[in-house]
Length: 291
Image (cartoon, rainbow, N blue to C red; front, top):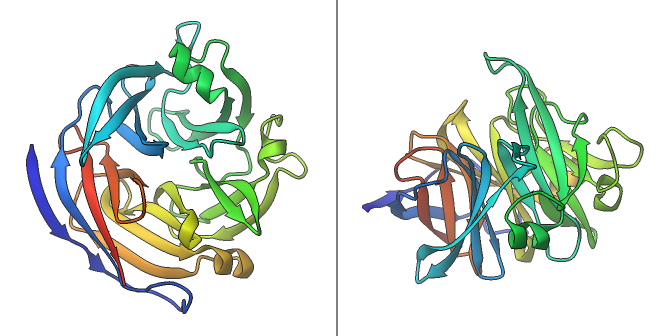
């Protein structure tokens, strides 16, 4: 186990009198968690940490937190149906405990990696955790054709209503989009009438999204350049929605050169877990301070 204490450097922030502008992040400890393949993200739900990746098939592993350490509880989900790898490259889990659960997938269409297809799956989350596969738990498959490049679903709230937010990874025309979950769960394409509710433009290389409900902040979990270096962009969500472009509270860059893939706060907003696709030091304890 390798110890780190990497202090974040901040780049810039734009107006926001409603939010603290001095947000600092540190990697307190980096650990290597095996059997994830290239880890693609993290989701914290009711005291359980779910890490997902693209091993020989897309998969999710469940951990409990003992102190600051994630402990594997021998529960794994394979994102397969009838033995076939369906969600081979999971890119986000939209879960809020009350509305439908969605999992994103980015499918490579050519060897060069220049063409991708984005798909969102509506799943029976509790059934998935119980049986360990998508068999009988895959409720709907939705082509995210409203996207520009890739999909990474996350629940957010806007004006008192839940929406499924997602964002693009590429370097051109990036957007954060909000989908109506009630329509999304039955749609075949996100371009269908009424599914896409609202959107705003954002900066490139978004790997994942994280919603901080208590602060009404959306965090873009990003790379500084394509596939490399860590960046966290904290957005004033309401102002971003109202103006049609991201309104930045703070950009935090960390001096790590691998590929940041996901982040989730644990209980509260002072400790979190950040994951990378690296084989080593892929699960990182994060300390976050707000002033």
